[in-house]
Length: 107
Image: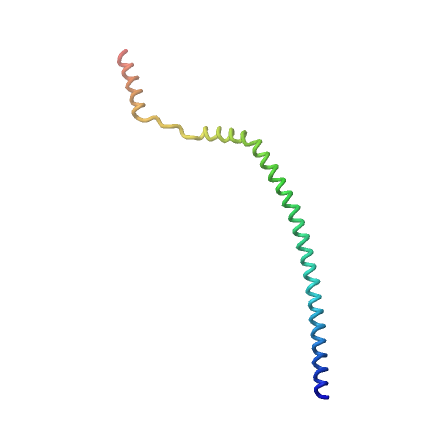
């Protein structure tokens, strides 16, 4: 009789443990389902925003291509304005001064 009573106590404790673990598992699954729904909503929203961003980038690229030639001309203009001019060497300058001085002395 003592063995039967020990077996009954064992099965009672095991049953309570299984019920508690099942309840905890169900609660964890409920939270997991909520998290997965939120992830699904976030991913669908990210997909929509990514497609909008792709459209904006495509519009920007087409606008940049249309304005590219104009911008290139403006940049080239300003680069030419501020580009240092090549320096005339001393030899050329001295030949000019010699020719001017010889022209003056000839008169």
